[in-house]
Amino acid sequence: MTACYQPLLTKAPARLINATGQPEFGLFTGSVPELALAEFDFRSVLDKPLGKLRCYFANKQFQFVTVSGKQWVDGQAKDWLLAVAIADVRYVSSGFVYLFQQDQQVFQHGILRPLQLGCRMSLSPQRGAASLQAGQRRWQLEPQPTQWLVEIDCGPLQASLVLHQAEPAVRLDSSTIASPQPPLALCAPTGYQGFTYTEKNNALAVSGQLSFSGHAIDLTQARAGYDFSAGFMRRQTNWRWSSINTLWQQRPFGLNLAAGVNETGMTENALWLDGRIQHLSPARFVFDRYQPDSRWHISTLCGELSLQFQPLFCRQEKIQTGLLASNFRQYVGYYQGCVRLADGQQLELTQCLGLAEDHYAKW
Image: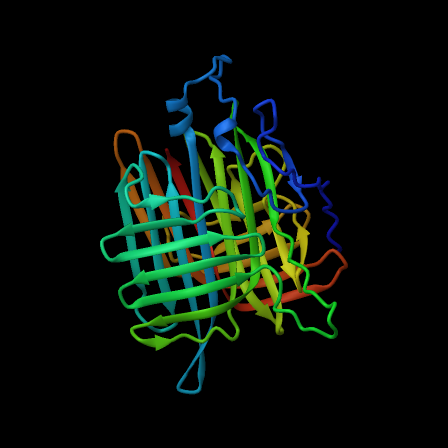
């Protein structure tokens, strides 16, 4: 069966918020360099202009980076996965880092601070730096036009990484330049009067240093993905999410699937292989929320993939306050199943380490 889903793409605007104060909607061919979220003409459901304070608290942003690879231990290849998150929902800032290493105890650390204490966020997916700090522990994500920089200073976990949107150039002559891998980038209406801009890119090459307890972790086969999301989202929202960054037969392969948040016909679903992107049809997640060790079944409407996911570890948080609530579960586990490319080629995934997430938020 050949995949047939071919959504219409539009050229990415130079600015997300246009001269009339409205967002440019669409599934874009590239990244949007300037968001200008403060210029959004935010109104009530009865069309009344809302003040700056209401606009400020309605504007949410979160950024996430994951890196996964293999480490040789006593002659055996062991899987590992690093995750780094920073979120600003105005009332609170939060984030976490964790390092999953096969057959070892997971290292994890979280930060939750009121308002924006110890937190700053990037201006766009190409500009500025997001950072979160509490005491001596700090991490930072710095997006740039062709790469993302990751810095972690978290006790035994230390990192200084570069995520490359273009493979390190193999120069055949002086004119050979590696082309950047296109991201998944879209802006969609959210609720009645809001919008969400999302940009993701998976299977990116990684360089730099990563260590735990003084021991270097091998980045030779590592692949990474990033997630930049910002906008005026629903007061209550939820989503399911799937992510893979790996080498399939030594070819860089990435996957991003989501259900929820973007509910207006545009999906944030795509796969990447050898630096090329293929957009995917709507995704379906079938799992038992109350049996955390049970398998997930993930498929797409047009049959591009059918996967099973077996959880191994869960990073979870449950928060209930007067203004905020969060039921967050992010799982590390193994994927297996088949993926069909647009040209009919079939990829078989076996013991492929990745992430799956189930999240409810009231913010």
